[in-house]
Length: 478
Image (spheres, rainbow, N blue to C red):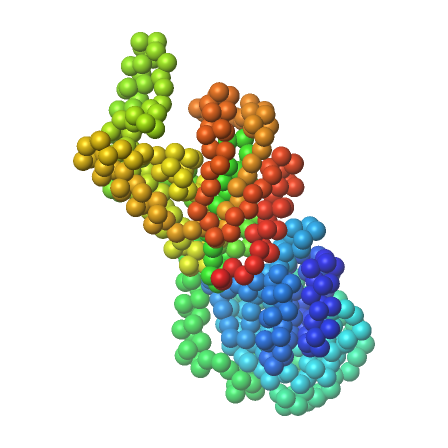
């Protein structure tokens, strides 16, 4: 059991919160080690206490894009030692049925409370209760073609769960559902036959018996099923959304070449996108938008010709100084500010939809520094220059703050050594890197929460530090 679970369960016991594992019993050991989602039942009257304790232990409530249900919540935590994500699927009422619709809300609160085995750190349903709940779930899942197809996809999982049970028990009546012990025994025998027809007929009869607990009428359920099929296919083929935060947030990894920021961005995206909706934005060199594409192409071509001309004359090309920049440089800087503004707005809008947006670099406000305004104030220049200056300042100041800035830094010697090993077209020379290092030594970027990260240790160490800081640093909703 990972410490993140152990600590949570201990806190729940201390605060007398009732909870138990109510299904998926054969996979509990895997779930407690961070593989798969752990299914818990928590009575509705303990919901607020559970949520607060879970939040205090670093668990975050997330939503599913393609399916959400009343009284069922997803909580993700992070184990600090291993940096593994863990997933708890919490039922505050027993909502079950076909895999997609879960069309039945069953009044089984008292039944579960009477059948909890509290001898383990993670309480669980006793043997008779495990069988009864399994059979109820089974016969509510398979009573339609769509339901059976979804059940069939996970048939091996259900069979393994059934085979893991201790079958030395006797059923008792479930008064809440008006289910007599002989009816449960009949369901048991039907399931054991493995006959598709027998199971289907029993499912239809059982659903009719529990008709009063349906959440949707027959017609509503059919409409829901059609919509669900469309959403799942569309998501599988095109959108590919995972869980979403409420709300999401924008973070940025900043630093000079050689600090490892691009590798950190890539690894964070890989780790988080396995579970959550994520998106990467490159704000150091943002993509051109509809309004700037033509001008950027023209200016880039002009700059290329200018450099080519210098090379032909065998003269060393020098970047313009801040005191005497060209008008072309000023226009290009204003366009860059506009592109950064547009991209940062897109990043913010995605975060409001529940995405974790990871930015490779982020704007700042210190003139002349990295990813910051580049046009110096000079009132002796003409109208177009003044327009570029004022617009650049306005655009940078209108950019929304990232929720977290992780500013990576290493000594110059380390950056130079790492840069030598990089395989990148047009990478900076050692002289250029040293010049940028000293120029941007006090650069700061636009963020609500700022973390200076020593990127000298091994990559995995730095990645884990940033992951922990990101996950545990305060309330994301503030």
